[in-house]
Image (tube, rainbow, N blue to C red):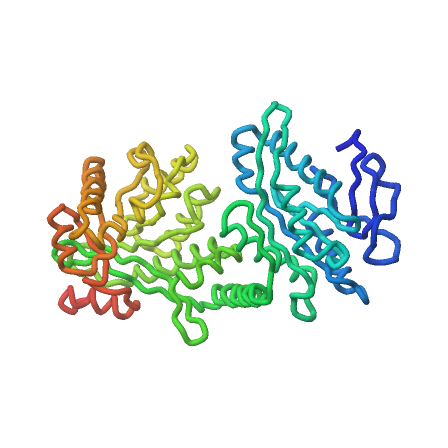
Length: 468
């Protein structure tokens, strides 16, 4: 931003001239009377960065007699489309333009900061002086929901989601990090409502945010202290013989065994999904090594991966290491990937998958039919198994359209050399319909629920006549 007369408000409430940051200009209400100290700066915009914003919030909250401190967390909707279509330089230009617009128009005393990417903050030392948090949020929303001209001559229309939190709605002892976390939780709720939405952190949302933080800490501890366990749901052929067993993680939390749906969002918010995937894969392979052979070949183990995916830089190396450590035959390992992860995979990602398939590892496409993967990708990727989503299975005997889709998936899979597994088979009528269509393997409560490791071993032993 050299060569401009832009001004930047630092985390200590002084206004710095964009051409000469050594000359301070007092503006508005500063958070403290002590001399200004150097603060972290965002390299692109020259604004305070996330660390400086957190420091400012902490200072404002700790200041005796301070007003109602508020922070707005703003996120531009679909900003990635600009980077993809116009390039990162155009994206940077838009960020600078919008943050300057904010900086020049927010009420005096407010500080604009940039967190990262397309996310910025507005910190207000006392929203009572600017009409309240609702008024400030409405003003910022109006500034960001606007049209921006870029150098290539295009007009780009933006909307922004905003989450806001104020100290009068926060519990006593709230820190700067806490207030920012509440605003971020409000932003999450705003984005769930659609582009351009605003959400204020009320007492209920603050309580939920604190609960989520506590649960995240507990889940992190469970990952490190074997507080998780696995169950296995058998996948059988038409004769009822177990071919595979899918590993399903459970969290033993406060006396309850929680299924994945109750804690995977917590893992995602806490950046724990990758560690969770590694734990599940490592544990499942080690346990599968001990399974008895039922006389028709060893049962394979399938593991659904959420974050340890082929586009991860060290995907093949990590999976290979875990397989080697477990001692399992690679041919017994099936990695399930949801359909959307197969969309437009880069060449190096496909190479990572092929490196594993050359060792014998198989890939399964999970929940097929409900995503948007391309048919070209379907035909070229090294996928051995296709799992027909339960959406098509549950009404296969009563809804002709669901039956037609299931038949199409089956025909396409067979013509490309893949086997099909039907998920969610719960009735004998569904089983008969699927077997008539030619499905080769089945998973669902009709055959077995998710079993504990001892129960799975007992099932496999019964199949061998008791021989280990």
